Structure formats: structure tokens, C-alpha cells
Amino acid sequence: MKRTALSLSVGICLLIGGLGGAIAAPPQGNQCSRGSLVQPKSQLKTIRNQEHGFAFNLPVNYSARRESFGANKPSPILVLNPTDAALLDCGRKYRVLDVAYAIEPIVIDILSLDGELLPPAPYTEELERQTITIAGQKAIFVKARASEGVPNAGGISLKVAVPAKNGRDRIVISFYTWKPQISAIHQQVFNQIVSSLSFR
Image (tube, rainbow, N blue to C red):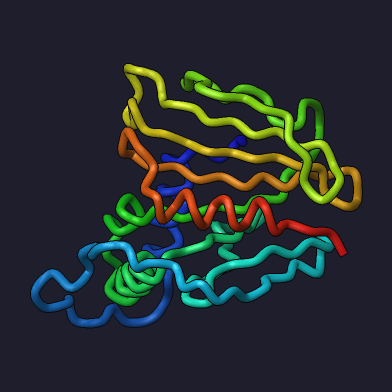
């Protein structure tokens, strides 16, 4: 995936910092701080992307947002735990840029299929690479760790890539944490998205 966790965080910073209008009064008592992750609810909702003809399921208390990081740049879908959604909203309201480095979204990108489905990412060590099947199509799953000597060294990423319905693009589902292990909550929701992905 071309967008690294660091560049995504920078993109969110630009999104927060570039909002127009007056700046609200600073939050009291450090309100833009990240609390504990909220457990996913067992009830599911279906998120549909009409443009590329795919759908996936999410816990009903999660949000899926299409964010734009500027003209002529891809607009990924950010899947957010309620805790991270509230933190991002607080950061936008008060223009607290640091929240971009605290949230841990699952990101769904539509990228051009101009070669390998999921080529090795720079500055990472692949821990696992598998060919899997999603909605009857060949897909690639990769678990990797950020290499030593980079700002996010030791962080863990999950990525799944599958060809889009039009045959020209690919859908890349990814998650990154700065921590050396992925939480059970994030793993559960990532698995839910991947296992429910379908084309219509």
C-alpha cells in the first residue's frame, strides 16, 4: 500500500488543520485525549460503496467515513472505533493535530492495479504472507513489522488486497498500530471486514 501509517497521520493532520471557520475554545481538562477502546457490538450493519460495487459489514457502533486529504488524492474510507471517532471529532473541532497520531483506523483504499496485487512495502519486515480467497477472487494477506531505524519501528500492520470489480483497481484493507501487538478488538473488526467483503 502506497500510503504509510505516517503519511496517513500527516494527511489527517492536514485535514484537521485545514478546516475553515473560527476555532472553538480549547477543550477543558484535556478532552481531546484517547480513552479505552469500546467493545464492538454483536449487531452488524452493511456499508456499501456504490462507485466500486463492494460492501462489507461492521459492528453497528463503528463508523465508516470517506475522508478527502486534498484535490487529486485518493479518498480512503476510515473505519473507526467509537473512541477514535470521538477523538477525531474533538481534534477537528479544536484543531488539535496530535489526535491524528493517536487514532488507529482500519483504512480501506481504492488504488490502481498497476502490477503486483500487494507488493512488499518498503521499510517493513514481512511476518506472514498468504494467498486467500475473498468473494471468489484471489487476494493477498500480509502481516508485517516496521523495520528498525524508522520512526514507527516495531509497529505491526495488517493488509489485504483484492482486485476491484472493474479489473483496473484493487481494494486494499489495512490496519496499523504503533504498538508491537494488535489488540483483540482491532483484529476482530479487521477480520469482520475482510470475511464479509462482497461484490455487487
